[in-house]
Every structure is written in structure tokens, then in C-alpha cells.
Length: 188
Image: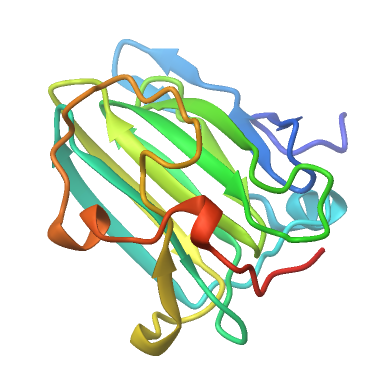
């Protein structure tokens, strides 16, 4: 018998240190599918946060772009994002000032059928764009929401090849500072 949890979970490193795509094995039959996305001992083995303080669910329509969001210290957080239905172009942006990949991003295409997720350590901004008719995202954060520590980077300032030219944006997301204007409080 294997010591790995059933079904298997793969952790695929992105080019950004500490940021992973989490790929569970999807077991399908005529009823649908089943996938395990969280197994605390396995997550701990990979050095990932396993204690979360808040969980969110967000529904969005095609061409909606949300992001790029983060919280500054001392309320920074690790985040796990999973697309439960639909498909999204998901982005992690490294904001850790002493990181060799500062200002660089990773793109992970998340989908409900793949049941994959992305793990972002503290010091990353997160955003996504809906590429299907609709999408339902579920995510966990290791700290509670703090309006005084809430921040963002303008979506079009980090050389991200978004799949839409004229996205549906919130008023808040339209006025964030650019990446070049941002003075990062994050470090490795």
C-alpha cells in the first residue's frame, strides 16, 4: 500500500519561488468526478500553509477581471484559489522586493473539470480573468480581511498577457497604483 493519500495530489512548481499549481487526480465515473485537493500532511511536507482564517466564494461572468489584490504586513496572507466551475486565466505576481523574480508573474489556467488550484505564499498579488461563460472560484486566506491593509496593483501594469483587451473591472481595480509606482513592504 502506498503512503500517498488517495487520490494523488501533484504539486507543480511555477517559476516563482513558493508558488505552486496543485493538481489533484480526478477520478471520474458516470456520476461525475471526485478529487482531493487538500491533505494537511502532504501540504506540510511541501512547506505550504495549512491554517486558514477565511474562505471566499466568487461568481463572475466572461471577461471579468479581478485583481491584482494583496494585503500588506502585518496582515499579509497565503492564499489558495480553486475554480469550482468554468475556467479562468489565473495570475500570481511576485511582490517580494528581495526575490529574484520580483515583478514577474506566473499564469495558471484553472478549471472546474481539472479541479486544479494555485497556492500563493505571502508577498504575492493575485488576479484572474474569466475565460468561460461564467466561473465560480473558491479561495482560502491565512489571515482575515483587513481594509486598512488591503492593496492592489493595476491589472495592466505588470506585462501580463491578459486574454481580454477590455475587461469588466470594478471601480476599485481601475485605480490601483501601477507596479512601477509600488514600494513593496514584502520580503522573502
